[in-house]
Length: 179
Image: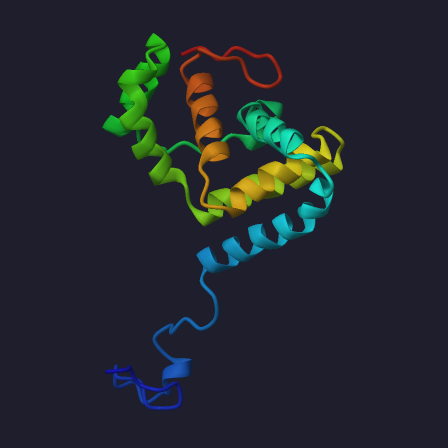
C-alpha cells in the first residue's frame, strides 16, 4: 500500500502536510545524481574514440591498469577503518602474493565501488585531461569504463592505493611512503 500523498497530513500528527514535514526526500538520490554525472561525462567522451580500430581500442583497454598512477586523485579512497579484508589485501600486496589476496581484493572493491567514488574518479579524469596530463583517448576509455559495470579501473586504482599505503609502490610524484 502506498504511503500518504504529499498534500495529505503527515502521519507524525504535526498538522503539517507531508511535503513540508518529516524530511520527505523528493527528487533523485545522491547515487542517482552520481551515476547520471558519470554517464554524461562518458557520453561526451565517446567522440574522442570515434574512428579507432579494434586493436587501438584493445590497447587503450589494456592501458587502463596504468591510468591510476598518473595522479593521486585517480586513486580510490580507502576505508578509514582497516577491516580484515583490507588487512589481508595489504598483506598480500606486501608479500607480492596475488593468489592470497584475490578474495580480499574482490570484497574490498565491492565495498568501495560506489557511484560517488566513480563520479570522483570521473571528475579527476576530466580535470587531468583538460590539463593535458592525460591523453584524451585514455581519459575517454577510462570514463567509459567507469560508466559501465566494469571494475577494471576501480580495481587498478584500489590496488595502486593499497600498494602505496603499504609502501610497496611510489606515489605518482615519485615519493615512497613509509609503511
